[in-house]
Image (cartoon, rainbow, N blue to C red; front, top):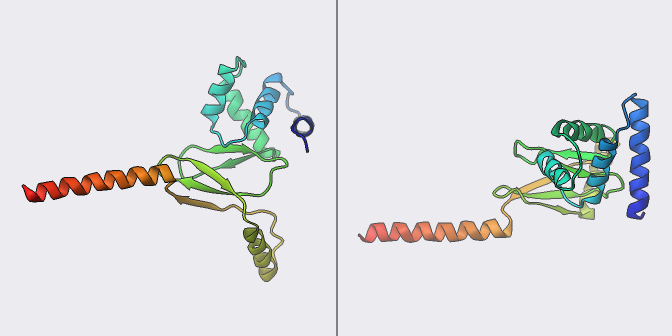
Length: 167
């Protein structure tokens, strides 16, 4: 599906959701939706807010927070808690099932998709007689940049200890 068709469809879904809940269909809410669906990354509320302000959108932090909660409620956005206090979000409509690797040092998030995970999900569902609809898998570790920095730091610390022992 093209990006334009996806954007039109998510707008219609959001409009129907707002109508169903008797909520106002404001230009700010649709601008936030459009901004999210133009992104291809994970983001936090503050990042989205600052980006929208830099793009000259007239939105408040409260509007961004509240609109994100609405978009999560109607399954157009997924909210993640990757071990930090700050929630991160990503668009979810028409998005393939995927999992995440998260750096515990810098917070970098990398998506990956492995069909074997889906096979395990199906097998476990069959075995336990569950109709599994989705899953969440987050792996935590150090990205290559942070691993390298840690090794350099550890080497420097070891060299200092050796110098202390020598003197």
